[in-house]
Structures are given as structure tokens and as C-alpha cells.
Image (tube, rainbow, N blue to C red; front, side, top):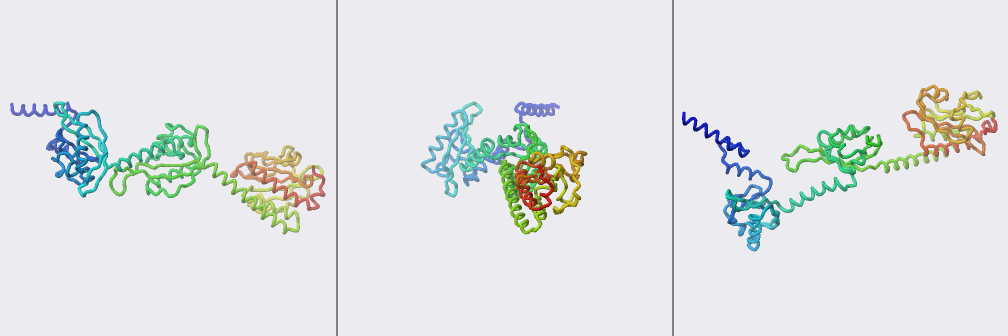
Length: 462
């Protein structure tokens, strides 16, 4: 009984001692064995020296860097004759041993010798070790090759520079497609503070174009092949409202440098972008302008081969409609200031501009009709509305019309009629540059129609 009680008390005392130190003993594992396992498992090269300068510990990473095994290293005093040149060994050892009595960590750089005779420059952090009595008992040091440390410092410096002063937006997107880090440039482009961007799904930050962006991130996560930078049009949902922006995007998969195996689990994707909206819009404007004037050149050449001036006007309008509008109407002015439909595109399926047989019956335009405004002002009149409404039907336009631009047909100081360009709801409203192009087309159409006697015989116009 007493033996049993003594065993119980001993076990209890051991448990109490372990709880007091915050550690738990592993049955069957000695403290020295556990320490050796921990040292060998470290990613850094570790070495320990006692108060006399003799090596007491040497882990596998130190063996990997220098080639000397623990059996060969432990017990030697300093590095003379094996891991350092004789001329440098005493100075190296003296510098390290000074760390034994000095507080804190001390950084040293010096050259050591590999077992194969090669030299390697290492950077060490040395710290003094004290015994149970509080007296200096030795030094332990962690060391790495200098070029490895420099590479690490460069990587850290690059990351900090990208997130501070980069001219590109940088967003770290995690595997759940949520921003985990955002630099200032990216926050300005996306129109939200950095804190408001973190942890939110990309779909909350981006409207139209979010699916394309998420697909690109998932592709990089899966394959690690970012490919070439690409232009992505996105609707940015910032504090200034929705804005359509074009971002030149590049993607890089991020993987842990400490992961093992051929396919390490990715940490996320680095999304780098630059706002190129203004440049792309300028390119689109230039392409549009080049196409339109090319169309006018071709139209003039084709119209010159038409004997009938009305047919020549129709050819001019056919070329002008390409990429510009869905429909066109040409109304001839009568002597009493009313309008008669003369040329038009089909109201159903797309087709060429053709003469309209109206029998001289004037159109029943309301007094505030945009075509009458263009006739009497004279000048271009643009309007936009909802297709299918009652006012729209009264204007005698196709039912899908959402935007209209009416311009007077002027030739030799006389108004011959009105040209109306129409767009459906799938197109944007007419912009000022569209008006300039329409005025050029209308002037050429008016010059052709002025040659037709029936257009000038109708009256003086306005």
C-alpha cells in the first residue's frame, strides 16, 4: 500500500512539476534526444559552443551548408584547421565568444570553409547562454549563407516596394478569391479604402467583368500559367459609383518557399494591373474615326458611278450606316414647310436605303417633332427615349428606336429636307463626335439630292 501510495505521489509530483513549467514529458523520450531532434529539424544552421569555445551542437543544416558532419564537428575547439582558415579562425572565435557576456543578439559575417575546400560567406546571429547558476556557459549561433539572406531581404524589399510605391495596382487574392492584401494604387483604382477591400468577394468589388476576373484567378491557381498580360473591362463599384474601366492585368501564382513536393499548395494569386482606360478609349476613337472616313471615301467613289442623284444619295447613306446607326430616314421639305418621306431603310430586317413611294402625302409630325425642329432651326437635334412609348410611336420611327439624331439637308443656302439617324436600345446615345460625322454625311447627301430636279422644285424650303 505504501509502495503504491509512493508511486502515486511520485507521479503526481511529476505532473505538478510539468504543469508548473508549462511543458509535458513524452514517455520514453529523453530530453537530450528531444533536443537533438529539434535541432536537426530546424531550417537554419545551428551550432553551439561551450565556455571554452568547443563545439557542443551541430545540426543537419550546418552539415548541409559546410559538409562537416556532427561527428566531425562536435568536440573541436573553434573552427581552426577545419571550418576556417588558420589566419581567420582565432578572430572568428573571439568575436563569437564576446557574445557570451554581451546582452542580446549579435550579427557577424565571415567566411568559413566547406569540407571540399570551398569557401562560403555566412551571416550569423550569436547569443550568449547562461548556466543554472546564472554564469556565462557558452554561445549558440544560427547561420545562413549570405546570398540566401540577401535573396530573402530582396524578396521582402520587393514586396514592400510593390505595396508602397509601385505604379501598378497590386492585389493578393487568396484561394477563396478574396483580397488579402491591397496596395495604395489598387485601392485608388478600385475606388475604396484598403480596409474596405480586404476579405470581400471579388464579385462585391467588381460588377460586370467579375466572372472573367474570377476565371483568370482560378486558372492561375489551378495551372500556375499566367500567360501574357490581358486587357479586362470591369465595372468598378467604388464610392464614386459604378465606373467602366479597362485594366491591363497580369497574374502570378504564389506558393510557399518552404513547401515540399512537386505540386505545393498555392498561397494565392498576385493580381497586378494598370488602368489603361484612357489609352484604350483613345485607340477605339482612332479606329472608329479611321473606319468612318474610309467608309466615306468608298461611298464617294461608289456614288460617283450612279447616274441618278437620288440613287447616289442612297449609296452614300448605305455606307454611312455601317457601325453608326440602325436606320436612316430622309424626308423632303414641301413648299409649305411640311415633310414627305423620300428615302428609308426597312423597319423590319436590315436592308439597303431605298426610295419610298409616299404619293406626296406629308407626314403627320407633331409640332414638337425633332425633325421639324431640325428643319426650322436649322441645326442638329438629338433625342433619346424609351422604345415603344406613345410619343415614340407618334414620331413614325421603327418601334425599337431609343436614340435619334435629326439634321437638316442644306445645299446652296437652302434646306431641302431632314435626315434622321436612328439607334436601338443596344447602342449608346449619339455623342458629339457622332454628330460631326453625321453632319459630313448629310452635307454630301444634300449635294447629291440638290441635283435632282424634283427635290428643288418642291419649294424654297426654309
